[in-house]
Amino acid sequence: MSHTSCTIISRSILSAAILALFLPVSATNAGPTIQSVTGGTQPGQAIVITGTGFGQKPEASPIMFDQVHTLWTEGTPSSPYQGLSAGDTVPTTSDHPWRGNSNDFFKLSDIDGLIRNYRAQIGPNRWNNYHDAILSTPRAVPDPSDGTMRRMYMSWDLNLSFVSNSQSGSHKFIRVWDTIGGSEEEIRISWTQMHLTYQGGSSSWGSVSTTPNQWHRMELFIDVDAGQIKAWFDGRKIHDITNFSVTTTRGLQPRLLGWDASGDADFRDEIVQLSNIYIDNTLARVEICDAALWTDCQSRAVQIPTQWKENEIQAQLAFGNFDNTERMYLYVVDHDGNVNREGVPLCSRCPTPPKIN
Image (cartoon, rainbow, N blue to C red; front, side, top):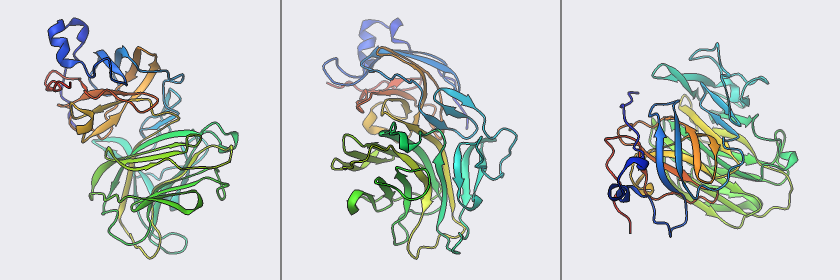
């Protein structure tokens, strides 16, 4: 991936007339307002975002951000696969991020010479079915028995070599339970290519059709106490559930992630890829996208906040699978999911956002 050299525009040095063109949202609208952005423009470089309405985020960094080559765990980076190479099996011992790797299908894989995705070729499972390629139970997520993870936002990039709804049956992208091992106790949530199922056999119908060999952004939000489940595919909301009701005091655990087919489907030798797996207990986050309006974003990448205050955020840039570095706009999402509607251009070649009345 090539990266265009850009200069971040700081509004503090612009005249009031020019500044008006950049203001993301009028002060009367709910949500964050970005006033200036300073810092670098390349992956790994730091930026400082100033503004209003960012809200509070006591732990600035996410609970986990698995970029494969770098693992962020509550603000601390590490290299869990140091010494391994592309093609090596993803290990699941206690010093690695994931407790499970189905049939050792997932291998480390590289993009542009940097190991930053998980790649699996579907083979036979223990029943000789060609159904699944999954990673399971990330260690960074708290044990559900302590009840601390009652709210979870999860984002990941998914690339399948096939169309997700090309075969009949219910095929899971992710399953969330309230246990680490064994069966669920009360919470059992499954997002499939055809619907999202949850307690008591309830279903929210909504189709997800992937494009073969193309990266897609998957997002899932669960709030146990508010009774909400939401899911987005490439920024488009697929599910918006408000009647999720359980009595358990347990928390949430992503039990599997990837592709878990059912029925008579046969996906032999198909490829499943995962990367940029982000897990937190809040919707609050920083994103870059390729459009000047949030509603027009086609490609987005979540960033790594390192400090978070009501009027200032410090973050480290992460491009992930974002590939349009000549059009980069910054957005801040608050705890309730509000976002500045107009993005802040992060490069000198970015067109300015249109004025929103």
